[in-house]
Image (cartoon, rainbow, N blue to C red; front, side, top):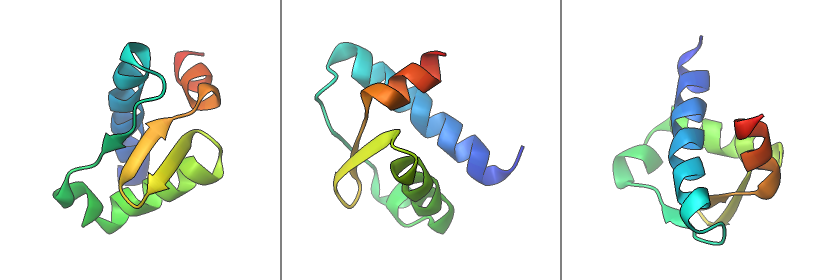
Length: 72
């Protein structure tokens, strides 16, 4: 598994926990995450696939499609 896939999975797990508590809640990613080019690429790919919605850079939430794919 590539580093990017590991980062995407870690992000999805974290966002899924937040989604289960409140599906409408956005999460602000920590600065070290935002500074990582790998993480920005992971967020970008998840957003392009429709799994993550980004309110502004670094403020994200899982979409219903993303949650379904994660739980699937």
